[in-house]
Length: 105
Image 1 (cartoon, rainbow, N blue to C red):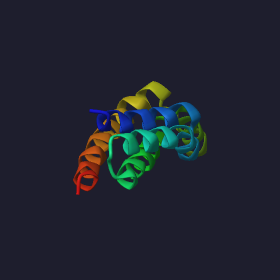
Image 2 (image 1 turned 180 degrees about the vertical axis):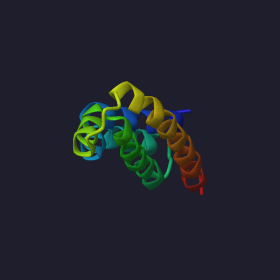
Image 3 (image 1 turned 90 degrees about the vertical axis):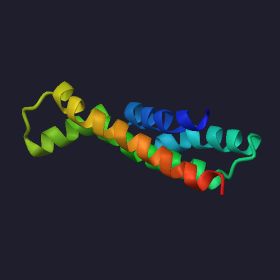
Image 4 (image 1 turned 180 degrees about the horizontal axis):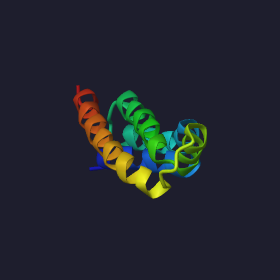
């Protein structure tokens, strides 16, 4: 069941930090250790971490504010997240399912 938590945790890290890199630095070691303890292949778990963190950038407030400023948009942050949030969630489900195909080969 742990694999179901990798993507949301990675996206949450990017949401809070505004950076895929910071999310990866924060959580990749944890995911690597768990994967090794469970005798899983490490590469698919870390690939899931990276992909999910990149998806989490679309709901990061710092990135939304920067995009709104550059695009001179008057859409509220909440309205923006209501549009991008479900897309992010769908991406997290898809990349988790894809990673399962590589995890147990």
